[in-house]
Amino acid sequence: GAVVSQHPSWVICKSGTSVKIECRSLDFQATTMFWYRQFPKQSLMLMATSNEGSKATYEQGVEKDKFLINHASLTLSTLTVTSAHPEDSSFYICSARDPGLGQPQHFGDGTRLSIL
Amino acid sequence: RKEVEQDPGPFNVPEGATVAFNCTYSNSASQSFFWYRQDCRKEPKLLMSVYSSGNEDGRFTAQLNRASQYISLLIRDSKLSDSATYLCVVRDDMRFGAGTRLTVKP
Image (cartoon, rainbow over all chains, first blue to last red; front, side, top):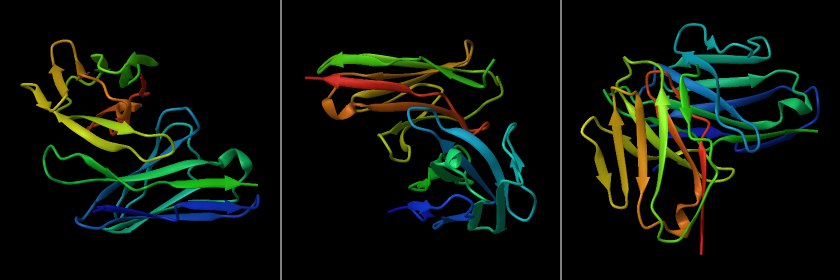
């Protein structure tokens, strides 16, 4: 079964709306989670690393005030796309790294965001 | 140089063909490597880990070359269902390669 749960799976909103996406690790505690964005026919791009109890680390070119990340517990990270515009429409995927040595990261099912 | 680079593809092969992808990484201290498969409009799914000694899982073989800093994925006897984008990831960086699109045709 799924070890990382991501909700919602599909969002359609008007321009200017803020959208929150949740990412939960189900079977393990994740001190670190990762948020990716993928545009059609492009690769997964790491947006930010979410750290439990501290500020997220954003990749170059990603606006931290636009994409608010909160990692308040060891099993939950949220990404809020503030005042979303059509150019923010994309596939957003979170992942959590199983803390065991050599273990892979597990992905949520992704959120397809469409801003009208 | 990007942290993780992959063969650009796309690869279009007939059923039954053998196909190989490479992925280079820049951090020589990297320890863990994985191959993922991503189907269209879906999240990546773990295909296999890559071990130093090389490892095989059915028709799939993964290898690591630390000296040249690359990993490879070999698919034998390609099936139509193997059509997907294959992504390599270096665990330390948590960054994906751009992905290699594979299309297996009848």
